[in-house]
Amino acid sequence: MEVQFFDKKIEEFIDHLDNIVNPKVFRVIALLEEFGPSLGMPQSKKIGQRLFELRILGKQHIRIIYTFHRDSAILLHGFIKKSEKIPLKEICLAKAKLSVLDRR
Image (cartoon, rainbow, N blue to C red; front, side):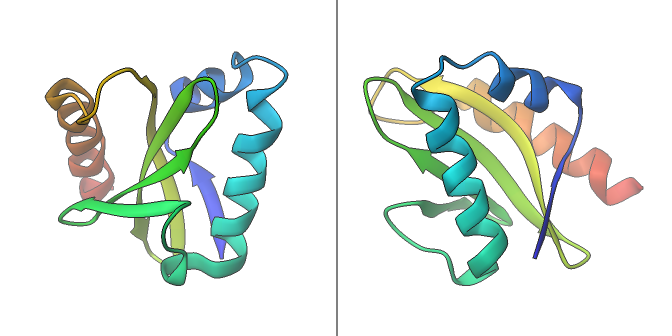
């Protein structure tokens, strides 16, 4: 399955992660390419209607929110998770990008 970046912001987020976390992120993205919708815990989790999170664990817990659109996985938004729950702000940003994607 093809994995695409929604915009430059998600690319820049991943590029600016430290040298220890960055390879872990690309390893999980490669798993998403290989397994697509069947990728499950601990690497991926459904968080809402049409929204999933890639889970990268370590010193910093990285989350990348993605969706499936036209036979591709689209990485919408990334952030460093600092609390138990995903902040509503992060979900709202991903939902806004998803609605833009649906209008394309």
